[in-house]
Image 1 (cartoon, rainbow, N blue to C red):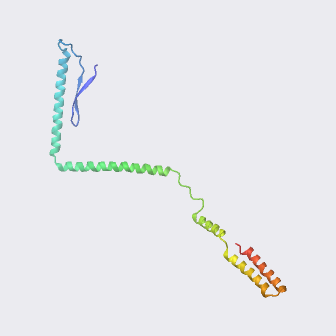
Image 2: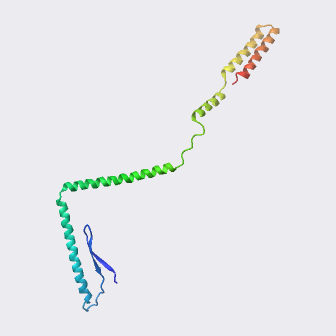
Length: 177
Protein backbone atom coordinates (compact mmCIF):
# COMPACT_ATOMS: atom_id res chain seq x y z
CA UNK A 1 0.00 0.00 0.00
CA UNK A 2 1.37 3.46 -0.84
CA UNK A 3 2.34 5.87 1.95
CA UNK A 4 -0.53 7.75 3.63
CA UNK A 5 -0.57 11.53 3.78
CA UNK A 6 -2.82 13.74 5.94
CA UNK A 7 -4.74 16.89 5.27
CA UNK A 8 -5.18 18.60 8.68
CA UNK A 9 -7.70 21.23 9.78
CA UNK A 10 -6.06 22.88 12.78
CA UNK A 11 -8.52 23.28 15.65
CA UNK A 12 -8.50 22.36 19.29
CA UNK A 13 -8.97 18.69 18.34
CA UNK A 14 -6.97 18.85 15.06
CA UNK A 15 -9.39 17.12 12.67
CA UNK A 16 -7.77 15.53 9.66
CA UNK A 17 -8.46 13.56 6.47
CA UNK A 18 -6.16 10.79 5.35
CA UNK A 19 -4.98 11.00 1.76
CA UNK A 20 -3.87 8.01 -0.24
CA UNK A 21 -0.93 8.48 -2.58
CA UNK A 22 -1.85 7.90 -6.23
CA UNK A 23 0.46 7.35 -9.17
CA UNK A 24 1.17 10.43 -11.24
CA UNK A 25 -0.32 10.12 -14.78
CA UNK A 26 1.88 10.70 -17.79
CA UNK A 27 1.39 13.87 -19.75
CA UNK A 28 -1.35 13.52 -22.29
CA UNK A 29 -2.92 10.46 -20.63
CA UNK A 30 -6.32 10.46 -18.98
CA UNK A 31 -6.33 10.16 -15.18
CA UNK A 32 -6.92 6.61 -13.93
CA UNK A 33 -10.33 5.68 -12.48
CA UNK A 34 -8.82 5.56 -8.96
CA UNK A 35 -8.54 9.37 -9.13
CA UNK A 36 -12.29 9.77 -9.33
CA UNK A 37 -12.88 7.33 -6.46
CA UNK A 38 -10.24 9.05 -4.30
CA UNK A 39 -11.60 12.50 -5.10
CA UNK A 40 -15.14 11.49 -4.06
CA UNK A 41 -13.85 9.79 -0.89
CA UNK A 42 -11.82 12.87 0.08
CA UNK A 43 -14.82 15.14 -0.61
CA UNK A 44 -17.05 13.08 1.72
CA UNK A 45 -14.31 12.97 4.40
CA UNK A 46 -13.85 16.76 4.13
CA UNK A 47 -17.60 17.24 4.50
CA UNK A 48 -17.54 15.09 7.67
CA UNK A 49 -14.59 17.06 9.07
CA UNK A 50 -16.31 20.38 8.29
CA UNK A 51 -19.43 19.14 10.10
CA UNK A 52 -17.34 18.10 13.12
CA UNK A 53 -15.52 21.46 13.12
CA UNK A 54 -18.85 23.31 12.92
CA UNK A 55 -20.21 21.18 15.77
CA UNK A 56 -17.08 21.94 17.84
CA UNK A 57 -17.43 25.67 17.20
CA UNK A 58 -21.10 25.59 18.24
CA UNK A 59 -20.21 23.76 21.45
CA UNK A 60 -17.51 26.33 22.18
CA UNK A 61 -19.95 29.21 21.61
CA UNK A 62 -22.44 27.49 23.93
CA UNK A 63 -19.76 27.18 26.61
CA UNK A 64 -18.86 30.86 26.16
CA UNK A 65 -22.52 31.76 26.52
CA UNK A 66 -22.70 30.05 29.92
CA UNK A 67 -21.08 33.09 31.38
CA UNK A 68 -17.77 34.56 32.25
CA UNK A 69 -18.37 33.92 35.96
CA UNK A 70 -17.97 30.19 35.56
CA UNK A 71 -14.98 30.76 33.28
CA UNK A 72 -13.41 33.01 35.92
CA UNK A 73 -13.86 30.25 38.45
CA UNK A 74 -12.35 27.79 36.01
CA UNK A 75 -9.38 30.11 35.46
CA UNK A 76 -8.99 30.52 39.21
CA UNK A 77 -9.22 26.76 39.65
CA UNK A 78 -6.61 26.25 36.92
CA UNK A 79 -4.35 28.84 38.58
CA UNK A 80 -4.69 27.10 41.96
CA UNK A 81 -3.97 23.74 40.33
CA UNK A 82 -0.81 25.07 38.68
CA UNK A 83 0.37 26.67 41.93
CA UNK A 84 -0.27 23.39 43.75
CA UNK A 85 1.67 21.51 41.09
CA UNK A 86 4.60 23.92 41.53
CA UNK A 87 4.35 23.52 45.30
CA UNK A 88 4.38 19.72 44.99
CA UNK A 89 7.44 19.92 42.77
CA UNK A 90 9.31 21.99 45.38
CA UNK A 91 8.02 19.72 48.13
CA UNK A 92 9.47 16.72 46.30
CA UNK A 93 12.79 18.55 45.89
CA UNK A 94 12.88 19.36 49.61
CA UNK A 95 12.05 15.75 50.44
CA UNK A 96 14.87 14.53 48.18
CA UNK A 97 17.38 16.92 49.76
CA UNK A 98 16.27 15.79 53.24
CA UNK A 99 16.65 12.12 52.26
CA UNK A 100 20.15 12.78 50.93
CA UNK A 101 21.20 14.73 54.03
CA UNK A 102 19.77 11.99 56.28
CA UNK A 103 21.68 9.34 54.33
CA UNK A 104 25.01 11.11 54.82
CA UNK A 105 27.18 9.92 57.69
CA UNK A 106 26.68 12.14 60.76
CA UNK A 107 29.59 14.18 62.01
CA UNK A 108 31.85 12.45 64.50
CA UNK A 109 31.47 13.81 68.03
CA UNK A 110 34.50 15.65 69.39
CA UNK A 111 37.11 13.41 70.98
CA UNK A 112 37.20 15.51 74.13
CA UNK A 113 34.66 17.99 75.40
CA UNK A 114 35.65 21.60 74.86
CA UNK A 115 35.59 22.33 78.61
CA UNK A 116 38.29 19.67 79.18
CA UNK A 117 40.36 21.15 76.41
CA UNK A 118 40.10 24.59 77.98
CA UNK A 119 41.18 23.27 81.41
CA UNK A 120 44.18 21.50 79.90
CA UNK A 121 45.16 24.60 77.92
CA UNK A 122 45.04 26.70 81.09
CA UNK A 123 47.22 24.18 82.96
CA UNK A 124 49.81 24.23 80.18
CA UNK A 125 49.91 28.03 80.14
CA UNK A 126 50.22 28.18 83.95
CA UNK A 127 53.02 25.61 83.92
CA UNK A 128 55.00 27.70 81.44
CA UNK A 129 54.68 30.93 83.44
CA UNK A 130 57.28 31.47 86.16
CA UNK A 131 56.08 31.20 89.78
CA UNK A 132 56.88 34.66 91.13
CA UNK A 133 55.76 33.83 94.66
CA UNK A 134 58.32 31.01 94.86
CA UNK A 135 61.09 33.20 93.43
CA UNK A 136 60.28 36.03 95.85
CA UNK A 137 60.24 33.68 98.86
CA UNK A 138 63.60 32.09 97.97
CA UNK A 139 65.18 35.48 97.34
CA UNK A 140 63.84 36.76 100.70
CA UNK A 141 65.34 33.74 102.52
CA UNK A 142 68.66 34.19 100.69
CA UNK A 143 68.80 37.88 101.62
CA UNK A 144 67.90 36.99 105.23
CA UNK A 145 70.76 34.45 105.28
CA UNK A 146 73.17 37.11 104.02
CA UNK A 147 71.92 39.68 106.55
CA UNK A 148 72.40 37.08 109.31
CA UNK A 149 76.14 37.03 108.45
CA UNK A 150 76.24 40.82 108.83
CA UNK A 151 74.24 41.03 112.08
CA UNK A 152 75.07 37.80 113.93
CA UNK A 153 78.45 36.55 115.04
CA UNK A 154 80.07 34.02 112.67
CA UNK A 155 79.55 31.00 114.93
CA UNK A 156 75.77 31.66 115.07
CA UNK A 157 75.50 32.98 111.48
CA UNK A 158 76.62 29.64 109.98
CA UNK A 159 73.84 27.72 111.72
CA UNK A 160 71.16 30.34 110.97
CA UNK A 161 72.26 30.57 107.30
CA UNK A 162 72.25 26.77 107.01
CA UNK A 163 68.77 26.64 108.54
CA UNK A 164 67.42 29.42 106.24
CA UNK A 165 68.92 27.90 103.09
CA UNK A 166 67.59 24.43 103.92
CA UNK A 167 64.12 25.97 104.39
CA UNK A 168 64.52 27.67 100.98
CA UNK A 169 65.48 24.33 99.41
CA UNK A 170 62.46 22.61 100.99
CA UNK A 171 60.22 25.36 99.65
CA UNK A 172 61.76 24.64 96.26
CA UNK A 173 60.67 21.02 96.52
CA UNK A 174 57.20 21.56 97.93
CA UNK A 175 56.10 24.93 96.49
CA UNK A 176 57.34 24.33 92.99
CA UNK A 177 53.99 22.91 91.84
